[in-house]
Picture 1 (cartoon, helix red, strand yellow):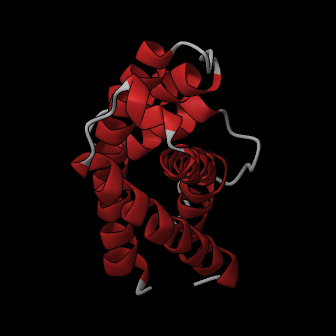
Picture 2 (spheres, helix red, strand yellow):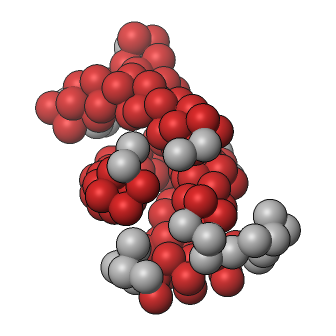
Length: 152
């Protein structure tokens, strides 16, 4: 296996470690306007959302493409994202392209929110927490597939 794919997996694993810690904290908390007044809580949210977005970026921009190149399913690094997703679905590496679309929608909600709108922030945090579970499951399935097919 090419080191670049291994490096991508290691990088994503590292991001997941931090995100998992913040995820556990956020799942236990009741998020209210008063809760947001505590700067420590804001830092946990920001850390979680930063790692969430970084993981999603690395999955979409790096891992999917590198994996398909390594499997010799594509040979053009400029293959469109929809073609990559459709190929991953056809190979049963991902269950449904719609899952990735949902994760993209969550990311867009996070990046376009208004920080002063606490209700919107709380909704987006809950969306991201649920999206994180979906993204983690997707990643674990991809990693397992790569370990089986490419002897990672």
